[in-house]
Length: 313
Image (cartoon, rainbow, N blue to C red):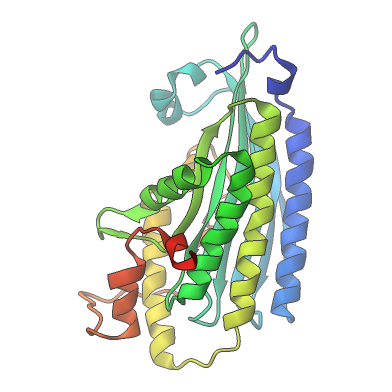
C-alpha cells in the first residue's frame, strides 16, 4: 500500500458520503419510473453507538414486489472482535463505514432479482495512517434466464471496468462467481457480475472513481433487462419456482453475506439489514427439476460460472 501522505491517497469520507446520498436518490428515481405505480417510502434511523441512515422501500408495485435501497453511515470507537480477528491491523482503531445497498425482488419470474452494493470503510488511530478501502459490486439472480440478458449484464460490467485496466473485469467477475456461491448447494446464487473488496490501490482518487463507475453502471445494466421482460406472461408454475429459488437468496444472505453479518455484529438497524429478504418465499423438500425443462436449464447451464462474453464475440 502506498503511503497516505501522497495527496492522491488521502481519503475524503465527506466526498464519498455526498456521492452515496445522490446515488440512492438517483436509483430510486429510476426504479420508480420503471415500476410506474408505486413510490419509495423513506425511513431515517439513528444508531445508538453512532451514525444512522435512510431506508428507501418500494412495495406492491406493478413491476417490483419489493425493492429496497438503503444508505447507512455508521461509526464506532472499536471494531467487533470478529472483525479484528481477521484484520488485526484494525484493533484499537475507531471506524467509520458508509454505503448504499439495494436488493430488488420483481413480481414477474422472468425478471431477475438483483443486488448491488458500494461501500467505503475507514479506521483511524491517533499517530497512525488511516486504514481504508472500498468494496462493492452487483450480481444478477434470474429464475428463467435469457442469454441476451446475461450477456448484456456482463457486457456492461466489462465496459465499465475497461478504463481501469484489462485485468479488472476478469478479476472481479471471478471474485463474484466465487463469493456468491452456496457450498451446501454446490451452486452459484445466480449468473454473477462484479465483486470487489479491500480496494485502496493505486490511491483514493482512482479507487473512488472505480467505485463510482460500478455504482452508476448498475442501473444501466439492469434497466434494459427489466424493460424486455416485465410484461411477459407467466403462469402459477413459474411463480412457484420463483418463490422456491428465492429460498437460495435467503440462505446465502443469512449464512454467508459479509454485509449482513457486519451489520448485525455492529448493532445496525435490523429492519434495514434484513430488507434484502424477499417478501414471499417457499422451500420444498428434495426438489429436482424435470429434465429438459426451463427450470432444469437454469441448473444445468446458468448456475455454472463461465465466460458469458464469448457469446457476444
